[in-house]
Length: 294
Image (cartoon, rainbow, N blue to C red; front, side):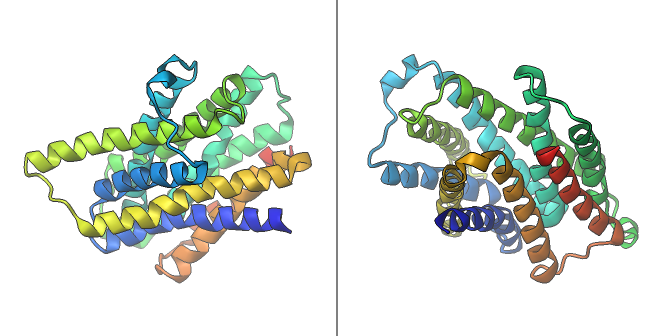
């Protein structure tokens, strides 16, 4: 029962991260500041749960340290891209593009770890790409009302590829370097890198007068950062509880996030989804199922 609760909590908390970007945009809160404060809160939350702040100079000698640097830079880049995509394209479209990126680590797994490439898995990859196109396609009314630049069209694709490569890197690092003894130190180090990059950028913007410190962004950072950390924490709890069937948990988690977020976007934010968009959402669930169980 507790494992099921962990899984449900992970779905809701992860979906909240995407929904929060929509709220931040509607309230006119500065995206960059909210994201930077979010990573600072992740470090504080992780250190509190861990019982101490594990980052120190000796970590430079660890074989995973430079991977943590790259991952931290990817974290803040992808989070900013996700926030921008949510506000410009929509919650459902951004969520599907982000979660379907799981096809990329599947391809890497087949290549690097000699996993079997079944016909169902290959069909799932092809269907996923089609689903991303359908889900991000604007309605005819939206296409008449505004002209979408190539930049807006490229955002879901960049989110799809970037987050997929990040997931593939996480899997590689976990298999090559990470164990229960150093997992917390690795994750908090990556969060520290993301926060440090963001803080340096914010300081430059503050000093040059391009931005001012926003108290609302700090509050938003707390509201995003704490769930951000615990979404991962709950997912790990679910994986541990379903150790004999862990290969199915992440796909189920992703399917739940896609469905939950799309429904919230439709019911709460009144996002208009065309028949093509709904077809894309359905195809995304089918694609994830094919890849997971093929």
